Image (spheres, rainbow, N blue to C red):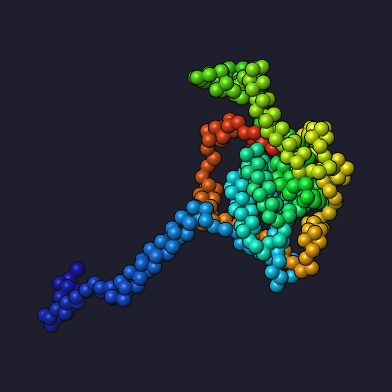
Length: 341
């Protein structure tokens, strides 16, 4: 490179250009502060909402179904659907309490579409319905399946409540099941042996890695008979046309079609939900009525936890531990231990 290329011919250098960093304007800072404060306030609202929902204070939303929307007299539909287990149980009990306290509700229709569920949960709902029917008459509309625990809760309507079943309804399955699997032969073939440390001979009872002893079979039979006798007893109480001896002949665990159930006295007549509503309306001597039902949208906490559970892998150990927990169930089907909501 030549010297003439580096220096100007007139001996003067060009002015120095100074570059300064531009400072952010003040309004940007203010905007960021406002956004931060708004986000914090929103998080506070969401937190409070979650705490309230978690605390169980949320109630169902009343929705109009049919009839006269301007009428003050109401018939409330309470849905029993899916497997009877938490959190379904708690929501159903809340709905029953809400209906019981509503003076405008003159009658209740129990709409059942369930294969049953846990013994304790079925009885909790039944006991609540018994109290409710002392204030308001209850009729029942059975849909696709109203079996085992589904039939158990229907008895909450009492001997005065009429039971309707659709032409294709399956019902019955009166009995108790405790799910159990016996893999002792498979474990023996593969050299697997279960050797838990226990404090008594019944502590590891129902282990799938060994056969039940006669003493264990007798113990669990006593436990199941208690729930079974209670089931038969509430049918005897809930069906005026059946006595305990007749109930015992029906309580084989079998399924009844709608026509068979009517013939056996388990159901009063064939009809759909609207037929049951009309019959209840006539019983109440109401010319105008508003039919409503209560819906429970998922709480914020459940939506958050549900999204998390979908993204989390299944824990095999947790699944094994849950499957090993003895569960007495009023459930239609041998796969009771696999139920979930």
